[in-house]
Image (cartoon, rainbow, N blue to C red; front, side, top):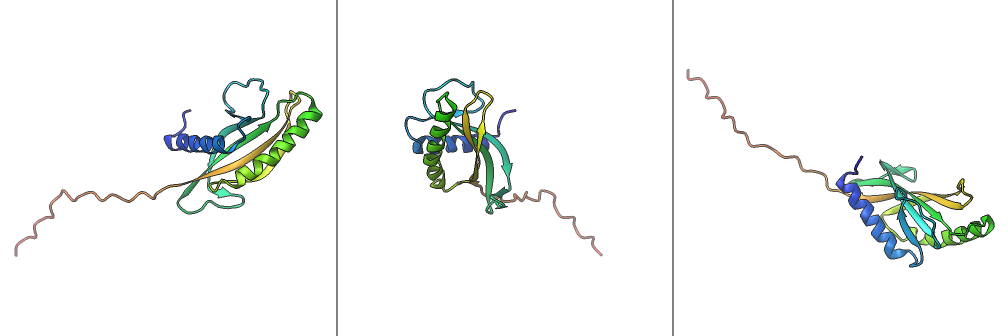
Length: 150
């Protein structure tokens, strides 16, 4: 199922913001693309649901919230080295996310993939302002009935 154009634009905006802010040696990839082994830190992103709440409160009026899952992975195959690296890199990622005014997160969950890599998964909400549609009034094309003469 294809995303709506607005959601595609939000994803493009998020990717552009992350690309500009992340360290140049990191790789940013769509989680739905084919996974490939990398020698660099990878931040995967995947679009999720449209939401009306953010961090336990409502999304601001005239905004839409779109959930994304960000998964931070380190290239080290050794579990001890990978865990240390991904934890260190997470401490670089969090201030980047905090500086993005239209992005909110509240938890980074440490996970271990079946392949042995340690990753951090963050559920973030990206906000976008939208304009309320103005109701259209259609012109009255039917003439009023003539009053009956007495």
